[in-house]
Image 1 (cartoon, rainbow, N blue to C red):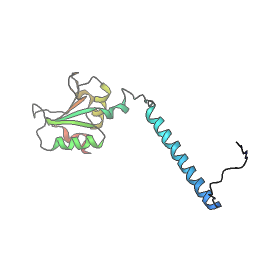
Image 2: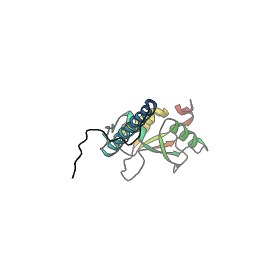
Image 3: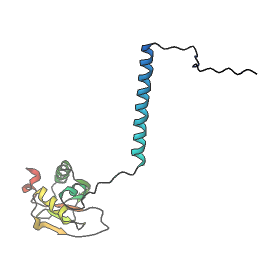
Length: 160
């Protein structure tokens, strides 16, 4: 048995010109970048995201409050005007309707959640005196603030 030693490279008969080499190297570079991007995306999705601590009080957290608007003045369409104004100011109005009476002289802000800064913010936004903020905490009530529109609605800031 005869063993032949050879230090030469195996030639499959394929030769590439300079342009073809550049093209193939470009494809390899693009595929490498795509693999790096996909690996980075996978790592970002798998690792737990760092949560940013959101304030639980103050004006910054007011925009997450849920509220209801109740018509207590009896004037048709006033509730819709209030709702439109509040939503334009990024408030989440989740319920509207009529109050138990249409004889409410002044607009009331009812603090349902116990977060005083939220009720004060709504009062300031609407131009309601803070003396008309009522505290009626109820942990089973799903809104933070209720606005009862009174007969003084024409003097409030939402109209101006």
